[in-house]
Length: 550
Image (tube, rainbow, N blue to C red; front, side):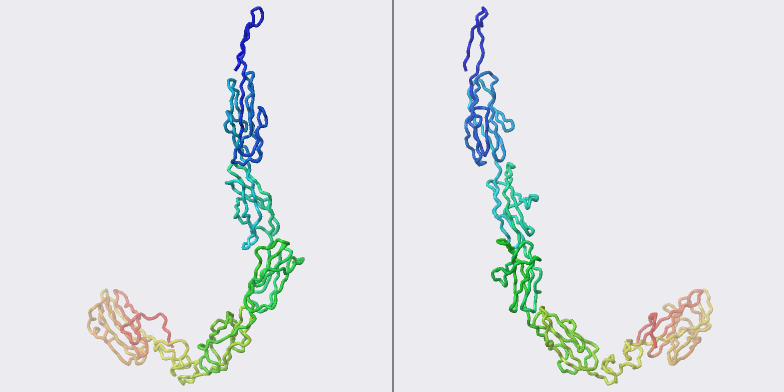
């Protein structure tokens, strides 16, 4: 710092004045991290220009100085950072920062040396690499060499200029047949995005339009294959190396035949090719050549033997084959029809019959010599009643046959009509005249009508748990009765109290007995209830609503 004193005389000259002059410098030793450029308003103005500095490396750039000698309003030292690639991140070691400019304000009293650093972060360099074609997934590629020259980064990929989506080296792309362009970009922690160059992908696909069925009765096979992109085809039979097998026609397809095939399983593979590009997942067809007819056999444990005479009117046969097959059978002269492993026939005529069965294997080969048996069905009358077994519902009992008189009530269908005739039910009625008082009723006449000849009529009287009065207390029984039977000798003129029950039972061998229960009621006519007594039953019971009789 220099101070100058000037004296000025009072005679009009300058007596003395004092002014301050400054003489101070600011020197900046600039460094740079990453790839960028720094310019200064000092000397020199271009301080640093580095385009090949890694993001994590710091290098010295140079020195810039601003001479601040002079008035107090001399300029501030400014350093401006500009990225070469990537982005400018920050300034370090500055007195003040505005945007990408570092500032050191004027200081008139001393020389200063400062060390600012400009930090840059450039975009990552992305390498997509060559595509890797899957040999198991149709039309699928990946890019295992996808990488960036820094990390960590996140990758995004796009196909044919479409939207970008997150991806990785293991990401698989399933693409349509044809040519495609894949790009990748990497984004680092600072947000810089680096983009790879395009990678060309060519997808070839093979369609197997037709070929032999799963099982074929032919030693030749014809295939029709096509491809949208491929021009030629490579073929392989039964694991042999692929070899050129033809060029597709104007319709985009190729027909290829193989001949002289051995019995058994075969696999045909074909792939489309266009120069050095080919379908990595060939189309394939596996089938079995079978030209040998199956052999059909009948189960010896089922059905009549060949030449056997039988009285059976229904037969069943067991059928099998020496390989998986469908079965057909018939009872001649009918045509063959599908059948299962067991074939049954009923209601056979009394005649000679021929049963035949044949197998058809999965390749369509038909057994030309069906398995068969000839047998004869003859009539039999085991019980000697003159009715053959087909018409006789019980060929072991001569008393059971069509036309036989039915015996009611024995639960046997003697006449083979499908119904066992029940016991008939006796139909009788009661008739009476009476006088009624508040406490009793007196019969002036009591009769049982329509009694079948030879039936037994029995009448009893009971009043609660005691006997009836007078002559009514004695039970009345009349055997071998018929027509109208009078009960006056027991009940005429006897006053019977309310609640008394007179029970009249009519029975006959081979019939359901008829029971009439006459109940004395107060100041009203007696009530009659019908009951039935089946043969051998210990007591009467309710009668069925409908009784079948002949």
